View (cartoon, rainbow, N blue to C red):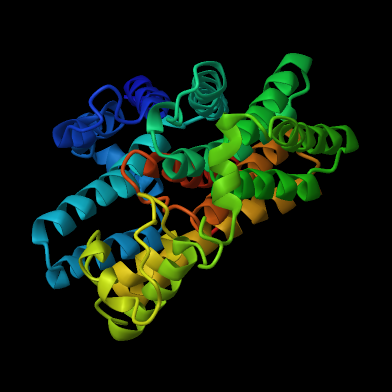
Amino acid sequence: MGALAMVLAAVAIVSSAFHFWPLENSRTWQMLCPSNLAVLIWLPICGFWLLRKDARQKAAGLLPHVSVLAYVAINVLSVAFAPDFGRAANFTIKLALMLVGGYILLTFAISSEKTLKISYILAAAAAGISVFYCLAARFGFGSDSFAFHGSAYKYGTYIGILVPMCGVYLLTDSRSWPKLLGGVLAAGAILSSGSLGAVAAIVAGLALSVVLLPRLPVRLSIIGSVVCGIGALFLLSSNPAVATLKNDIRLAEQDASNLRQRYIEWQAEINLLQERTVTGTGAGCINAYRSSFYYRLPKLNTLEAFDQNGYLATAAETGILGLVCFCWVVFNYGKQAFAAVVTARRKSDVTRHRFAAANLAGLAGAVVANLFSSVHYNGILIAFVLVLALIARTQQLYGEQFDA
């Protein structure tokens, strides 16, 4: 069972780098892409496994924290208030599939320190595929797409979660070649970014690790990676491949008289929340209402797909309770990750400290990335769930499960 779970988890993690390629426009493929399909295959297998008496005692340790279950429940309830039942149900099914089913698969697969390390290596492989394909496509072939994700915002959220986590894991290795790979990955990710959210998430996650990690050489290597990435952006600022990022960083529209539509959209979502504080619009149905809540703000129709504040979108769709539950998820796992860092540092446990710092860097990246593009998007959510699973499993495997 463990070997099968690890194989399926490997498929889910690595294939996430390819997003919905090669059938980006197929709704069926978007649901049955390898990452989702791996989880769907696992669920009935896990169901049969639970029929064993000895399995039921272990099952509790595989489930996500109650905060995750509460958040999924709020999304399910919000479907009743949705103007488009099909859209809301589809969104909620995919959300529950990964937050619960994907989490169970990953926690089952990560059953030892060896599989824990393998999970970071798989995540680094996925991040590396995305980053280096994006660099090759944009700087080598002049493509406008961002790796297999297409959108700069979805790509930015994906690497904004995985790169800080994997970068810290690689840069804290005792060997030279993983350090080199980690530095190149971090610098390359910053250079390949086409959105403010990607740069902010990567820098935030790596900056937090500088504070958490005790060894000066590791701190300097992380700082050096960030400086190299940002320095490369300035050196190549005239390259057309950097134009998307330069435009995204601007606070004003190209007409120089209006605030960027992104920030106007944030206010519209706050207006919507004030009107539908309890019910929201229903999961996945914000587009059905938001145009009515600009009021006197200019609606310029320049908001790009997936350029969405994840916190405000969650609140607008599932009401204030949905936002509270999502923040509970972040707080609970953040508390676990920070506790692991403190415990490992107190015990001078270098290995555990490495895992814990990488986990917290990944969660910090997700928290920041969610300001600019939601972590809930199908195909992106697995990166966020992987961070949650790694945080929980790091605690459990070291015998100090933290009950928040």
